[in-house]
Every structure is written in structure tokens, then in C-alpha cells.
Length: 468
Image (tube, rainbow, N blue to C red; front, side, top):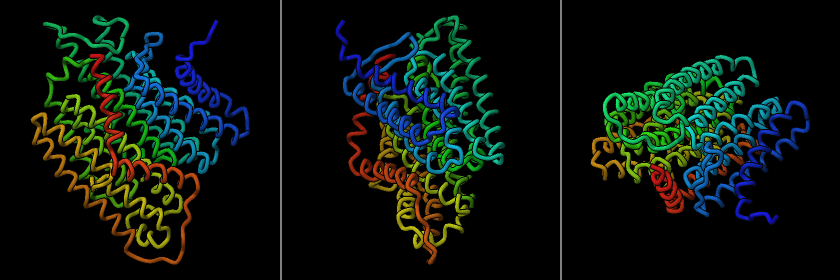
């Protein structure tokens, strides 16, 4: 029987994810860390390429009524696999027990891909749980003093999981298969039960995404995690939660989201303000970036609050933008932390010690602040204009004000970096340098010419809304 060549990308995608999990399963049984690193990295690259090819083909295929491969999932498959590759490279260079890290890395990756390619609420629930539990244990394998951060992540994740499970249980009478499909408008008590389920799922995913008031654990967990894990927490785990949130809100609850516009506007505004105000008073740079990432989650929520095709497209673009900004910034901050450089004062004279790291960190922070022509400016411009076009001018104006507030604490770090001169030099490790270079390429080059990414985000948002 002839092999259907059109099935090849699907086979590569599924086979590559299987290889990642298989490598994790044998990581503690086989000591060849270089071989395991090469296999896991090659598999992640294959996922990126297969997802890109499937995106270009415009395919929309469901497997086992659990997974769906279509442009929205393909785009985030590319993003998650690319970021996991950067984290894998950093862990290989920095982890004291890379094999132990890898033994959990594959299962966290499997959970992430399950969420991204989900066609079922149950797949999203199990995927987020696998991601959260594996990540919590990845935090503590390095050293005992990371236990507090792991416990906080595990406890908050457990609460979120319980809320999510109760929320989808409310949907069982209306969809026993718990498929990721639109629920029509219902009269009477059905309307209130569905609305309650929407609120509970929004609250549950807000824990993972860092939305106010469910984000108080984030600074402590980020600060208490190993250096190579912080980019994963901020750049990947939170973005997977946003993928789940967008998918569920606009596919399953598409009819009901428009009934509660003020809810998501309030969440967006409160998250922006909370993150920025708390970041203003931080002296530890890692905690400052943790609060900054909370404010960035508020910006992403602007597009969700707008609830239009343009708004979703803007949120998708900003998810991409912030993912690379925060991975690049946290990579440098974690590298400096390993050299006991932690506070804003410790950063004094960094430019004379390593000008590449200093320039990169400066560009990442300017991009987060929304300074053109960097990618952060493009993302905020799209988000705020989407709010303006939807008649939400106060929300757009509030976002602009918060961007100006954030400039203070970013500038506090940047000015310290260039304030003094030191003779002692610092040298970037190769793993950190590679991650920073990739992130910097996205921040600068895509910032200058954002149209390709805007087109990809537009196609992804249209494919998502076509399922409603």
C-alpha cells in the first residue's frame, strides 16, 4: 500500500513529541547527556518545522476527538517548541544534574503540546496538570533551597486544577464529551450554569497566566527557582495558559464572553496596574521582572477583553513578543544572579564588564516598556488600537498610562548598568549567549519588520474564530 505523503508532517509532529517523552523516560537510565541533549533538541526543531509546514498548508484535522491540528495550534506549536529548545540549551549548560532535569522536561513538554493541540477540555485539563506538576519537580531537583518555590507553585496549581475540574463538570449535562466546541445560548438556569463555568475557568487559568488577583505567588516562585527555570515559567508556562484561555473563552464560551465585557476589562486594567506599581518598589531585579511579567499579562488581556478578531490577533502577537522578551531578559538576569549580582545596585557598571549582555538587557527592557522600533512597541500598538476600534478608549488610554509608569523601573535598571566602570570582566556562557541572541533577533528584527508575524497571528485568529 502506498504511503500518503500528505500525512508525513503529522507523523513527524507526533513522532517528534514521542521522542521527547521517550528521551525523558530513559534519561535516568542512560548517562550520555550529550546524546540525550542532541536527541531532545533535534526533536524540538522537528516540531517547529512540522508545525510551520502544517500552518502553511492550512490543514484542519482532528485526531481521536482529542487533538486538533489547525493554524492556531500550529502557530503556538512553533512558539512553544522554539522556547523549549532555548530552555533545554540553558539547562544543558547550567544544570548540575541535566539528566534529572530531562527526566521531567519531556513530560512538561507533552503537557504543553497537549494544551496547544487540544480539541477537548479534558485534554487541556490534563495537559496543564502535567505541565504544572512536572515544572514543580523540575524546580527542586537542583537544590533544596528551591523547595519553597516548588511547593508554592504546586499548591497554587492544585487549587487552580480543582476549580477547573469543577467548572468543566458543570458543562457535562450540555456536552458529555467535553469537546472544545461552541455551547449555544441557553435559556433559564442553563444560562447561569454556563456563566458560572465561564467565571470558574477564567479564574483557574488566571492562576497559571498571572492575572490579578490570582498572581501573588509569581514573584516568590520566580525568585526561588533555578536560573534556567525562570525563563520557562515566565516565557512558556504562562503563555500555554493564555493559549488555553483564548481557546476556551472564544470557542466554548464564544456566545457568553460578549455578555460580560466589563469582567475582562477589569481583569486587564487591574493586572496592568498591580504589576507596574509593585515593580516600582522592587530592588531585586528578578522580582522586578516578575512583577513586570504580571503587568505584561494585563496587556495581553486587552485583546481578550476586546473580544474581536483584531483583538485576538493582537493578543497572539503580544504573546509571541513577550515570550521572547522575557526569556531573553530572565536569561541574563539568571546568569548574573549565579554571580551574586541581584539588586539594582549590583548592576552598577555592568556595561563595562560585559557590553553585549548590557546592550541586550537594555533592548529587552526598552521593548517591554514599548519603545519603538522594538517588538514590544508593535504589540502594544496593536492591542491599544484594537481597544480603540472596539470603542474601549478608556482601556487603551489606561494601557498607555501604565506603559509610561513602567518606564521608571526599567530606566532605573538601565541607568545603573551604565553608571560606573569596573575592570573585572564577565563572560557570557555559550548557552545563555545563544538564547539571548535568538531572543534579540526576534525583539529587534521582527520589531522593525513585524508584518510577517502580524500575518501569522491574523491567520491563527481567523482559524480559531472559524470554529465558533
